Image (cartoon, rainbow, N blue to C red; front, side, top):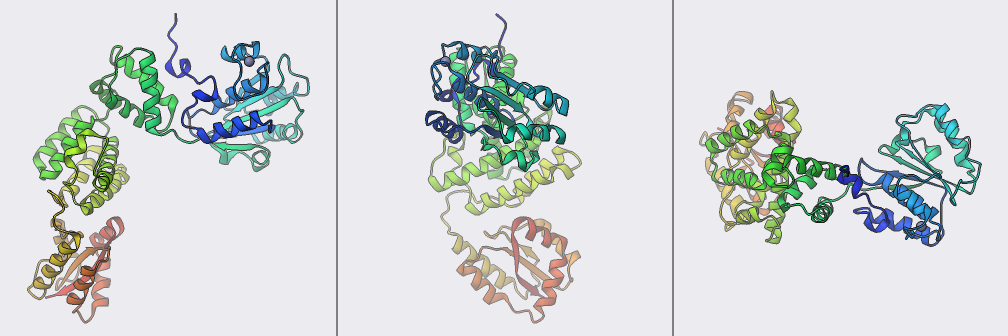
Length: 464
Ligand SMILES: [Zn+2]
């Protein structure tokens, strides 16, 4: 028997099998069961979230010979017809390939005749936003006063392009991107039914890569099965997706904790040879940092590899690291190549050394210490210093010397105000012409970039 791709073989046949669209399913089930049917529906949402699937199930429910209900019998001629994708009163049109007004007129010329076999004629117009203005106008006439035996179902990935005159005549449902956990569960269930070997981590990678689309997830799974020769293993899946395994991400975190620059750069070279996507890697690191930040609050994580890192990073560093990754990903397109952009992002993260060990020292006591340092350095021709909230120094700030007034020394600290921040201000606001100094500091490109990207704020300008 010819191989049927997973996305087709496991396409939901009734509302119970639909995953991740509970709110829409509930509304449709209620409409069918309480006989509150509208004549036109519009399903919007990204590709592969179930728009056409829901439309077909809904059309089946309308035409089941037993009765109109949310649970079609599954045995009658109508139900069989829908199962085989061959039901004479279901008209499916892809508006992307039939945009012209003549196509629309042809489609609608028989609209007033009774259905061939069923209760309703159902017109499913996919990618409806692609229709021409003339086609929309031709459709509008019928949509305003449709015969009782006609139902319209429109599907679109871009509802903003559908004219308001059409939208206002439809019941609209926006289908959500499907959560990775829901996709993961569905993949596990399907692979078990297919009697194929798999591991949880592979499913997690596949679910994340599908970005909310069940169809993409199933297509990727098909691809992974071929790639792995009949089974799904993490090494092969990571290789196929051009991404890294979770343990590789945790290896990178370990190097960050240790501040091990040479090992981390060697590791990046190695990844580069595996042709991984650095954009993907930055995103992966973002997710991991997010997971760690939450794990430090709750004290637990589902990802086994992250367990050893709980409590190893200060909350401040996790915030800074996340922000650096966000900016790194945003600016990746400006880098000469992705590897350079990725390396610079990691180096920047290393410049803010993570606080290792448990957070014995509270943030406020760290700030108090930072305040003392600032005061003691004042007046002693101290080196200009940019500080993160936990008083970590950035070596690159020496560039300030050449950019701002040579006799002035700037100190920047992050914005979050605590009692100790206030005390820092009291002790150090000694400059008489602070406004002029401040303006000079603001013109400095590094200072302005730190303020813009990391929320830093100038709290003190020291003179020597
Ligand atoms: Zn039936």
